[in-house]
Length: 299
Image 1 (cartoon, helix red, strand yellow):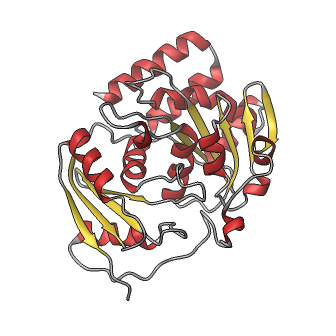
Image 2 (cartoon, rainbow, N blue to C red):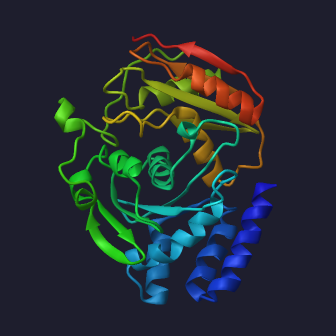
């Protein structure tokens, strides 16, 4: 069971670090039933208790976030924390899917940012990660609202503007896109079907596909819970984040990775591309489930 594995990693980390801050954060996550998010109230309390800034606290959290990593291919765990507008911490970690192509993998920065987006966050001010972001993640972060002010923090180097890692960058503004990822720009697709289908359509209505117009969302039936994921496109295309990965990542950080997925609905608008085939392949190999497909129609 994955929760047992995370707990074992937590215990090992506490022993290795011998650090009261690490122990306090892990104890908080366990009280939250492994939900990998710290509210700004909890963050402020921990900062006050240990006399640390938010970024200093986040630097202690990245090794904890890495405990959530799923790395059957590389065995190399990366942890990230996305800091929201109010100071909430959204944990992220890299995830690999054995037997699938590398394009299906989730990078830690993508994981933390998608986690924040699905949790309702409106702006990411800082990304804290335990290894220097790869080019894929730099380009992914460049799609964000506020990217010009986004700061990246590493254990050995803090307060770096994203664009110092991405000089002479190419992004959405170069393609005439004014409203970008995390900006409010709902679509108007008709909501029909049962609860799971409606949830998938609702996710598609707030997805981000300014280039292909292939707006899409996914809904997973996870026990009694419905967990959604949203498509997030990128000007450089390859860092585009697919809805199934988005939903599986959110399931992980909600502490529900051990609860089986019983049903999957993908809702997608007709555009210049489709994620249907890749979603079908991953759902079958990872979850042994077929997907239900809803073709979206504008109101």
